[in-house]
Image (cartoon, rainbow, N blue to C red):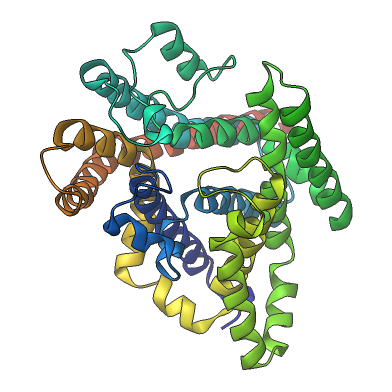
Length: 385
């Protein structure tokens, strides 16, 4: 059944399930990142193999999130032709920022009580390596300044990008929907190249903020996938089964091996081409998820739907769980035990965080949105009278 005739609720659930599976790959990927490429235990090395590499491609999963955000956030604008900005922003703040603040508090507590330097990878040593600096905490709260965004939680860097682009997203979407796709892609591609050139040749204190320019490309691609979803669905139906299989396999390889194909090491993403390759693969996977009956059936399975519902809480809390366990268990338990404890604790903490923080935040956002909408409707009624 093509996406163009999918019920709206089922369509969103498919995308939510994709987000949940992508969040799970970040959980696996960050466990893999505890060791560098030369000192990995066997339980970690297996994640570098296809298809297991697919389920531990944490950085590619973040690009997936950006694509999905562009797709989903553009749906109301495409459907209604406009959006009340302050209502959108209030809901977005409640949806993203409030849970983030709670997750930040837990991460700061972990850094306060457990900070230490353990003989693991440079990636690991960037987080909880020292006691919290309260000026740094303030920068995390306000999203201001050039600061070490992974000092408390290795996943927080992407939320900075998400919130910054969310603020301008309605304007971005309005522009993208009114110009030719080639212009949108070419412009954001040029911004990505510009950011990379500056980062390599002209280091600046504003480099972290400029990195947001690089990731605009993936939001734009998400918008275009949403805008042309019906056209893509019709084209998909005309493809032969063999072509579909080859295309989805190619998308998976591009997604999982973007860093390798782009010439980066397994923990380095300096060249934008690595992200472009993984992003292209992610776009292909989204297309097939929306249009393949087999993928519909898989993604609408109850387990996938649960992962989709819990994806944001999982993303926010898994690193804090991981670093807590490593600081408590490193040298005392083998890696298999630590990994098992990690997965169990992530499942429990994610569920509790969703119930106690994320779900109430969503409800607050919806309530405030309804209040603001009602107030605006009343103003219109008075103006008419």
